Image (cartoon, rainbow, N blue to C red; front, side, top):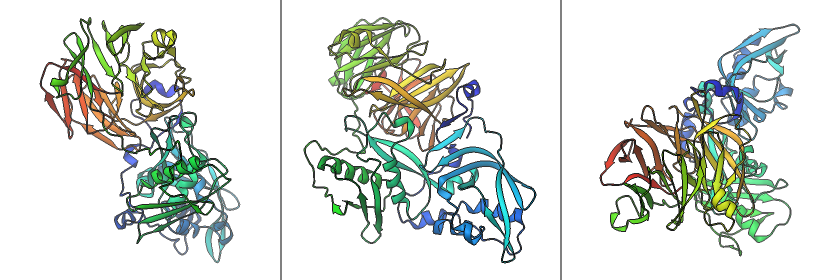
Length: 555
């Protein structure tokens, strides 16, 4: 599915694992058993008596939107034998325009579609920047009981893009950052099904998406299997039974937590009963080394800001009585940044040519170049930035190593390929970086996993995943675990875009340069080029009075 305004960036990547176009995705009720949800599903039509081969093929393609009874209606278009062999889950081809059906010899038909995306058996979506040339697929037809039926065709589904939102839904798998402090969402898309929880549990075992493979950890391992996942609607309870080789108590407690987090996809589940090899793992089983990981992280409203030529911090943007000066007499300061623990800070000076880090009140110039991006500080205390050349560098002001503290380490970006980075922000969990990439004045929003060593030291980014944005983005910040706030600095347009392709357009704000979020979409401040700051209320902006400029939340 195309990302508008990509331009020559399409030369970088013809297809990348990404997210469906927001026009084809809507939010649904997240109840496991909800009447409104069932009403919105599509019910396919059975084959018509006396249908032509072309009509049978067309009906079969359309029937793929109805997953009820294990695609029972779609199987009616197949011969009795082939209906037992056809496997719909291996892939879903999403296409635009009408499928073209061409008759050949010996009741062989060729079906061609303009494919815009593909969903694989793990629920991962590959969207195509440039749709590949149609590759005809073979359908063999035969008469059975006097009616035309499909004797053989490729496995998988064919879904018109306009129907995707009614037959598929996004779900969150959860993995964990290397410190087992944060839950990291991994978005997948699956057809509606009574067996969806079992499908999600099986997919969880298969592991994270490629871009997260070296960035997150899981309590599962590949040899595990799902013996059952049964939902009791009256008791609002899901019972999940895993099987596998013997493992320790800490692993089992973490595995249970992973299943509980998986259940957060459904409002109809109130209790999770998790068993391993038939033995229940209780929520009270908390071995040494285990701690609860909340899905909703409390907002950190401590801020850093500029007060004329001073870098200051206070407990919230309206708590002036708690203001403390960190650095004075800064020449042309900009882009103040604060770490999550309130001990590490950073800022730019002299027209974004110099990066300074601040530990307590000790300020150090660590990088002099040009066109530096707004710094970002991860929960390990590393200060990140990028410059005009696309170099990404990270500094650790608390490190005993002079190199890490003063010179920084270059972070490998294997997919850079000449791209320039206008903006870089690290997610609160520290496993993902959000970039605004530019080439030939065309920009694109992407995320990429972060590879770290055992101490949390960053080494490299993984592959990229592009994220849809309806505005041409110039600046980005994380506004939650799966939401990004993006700004077009030319037009003043801004939006919140989610990894599940939901988009919220914000009111235009003249001169808007950047936004800062306190870990969620409920605490967002906009910065304009005059130095004033605005608080986001609903979709509009309210001026924050006072002398502070570029008020910025942690991260």
